[in-house]
Length: 191
Image (cartoon, rainbow, N blue to C red; front, side):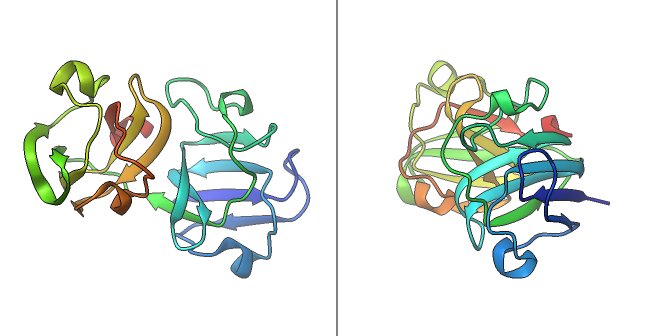
C-alpha cells in the first residue's frame, strides 16, 4: 500500500486529500488550490509543479513536509523536515508513486544528445560525475534497470529528476532545463 496526504494549510490542517495512486492533476480531481503540507505515510513519491508530471520535481520518502517560505528539494540523507526544503513555489499539481525495485540497477549515460559521444555505464550510486567520469553534463541516457535520481550538483544536491526505465534522447526528456548533472543515486536509497 502507498499513501500520501496533501493539506491546504502548513499546519497539516484544512482541506485534506489522501492519494493511493498517481494523479496527473491534483487541482481538478481533489479541488486543492494550494498545497502547504504533505504527509507521506507509505511509499516514495514525486510531486510535480505542473499537471501531467511536468516541471520541477520534489522526491519524498515517508515523513512530514511543511511549507516554509517555499517548496524545494529535500536531502534524502537527513530526516525529512521543512528546513531541508529550498524554495521555488508552493504550486504542486501532480504526483507519481515511485515504484520499488528489487533487482540490479543499470544505466548508460552519454555526453551528447541522441546517445552520441562518450558513453559510460553506471551500476551504483555516483557522488560526483565529474570525479568518476569527467562529466558535468549529461545530454542523453538510457535507463536499463531500476529507477534513478539525477541531481544537478555533486553530493546529491540541487534539482532532482526521477529517471525510470526507458530512453531519454535529450535532457528535456527528463524535465531538465539544461544538461547540468552532478550526481546519480539509485531509488533503493529512498526505501
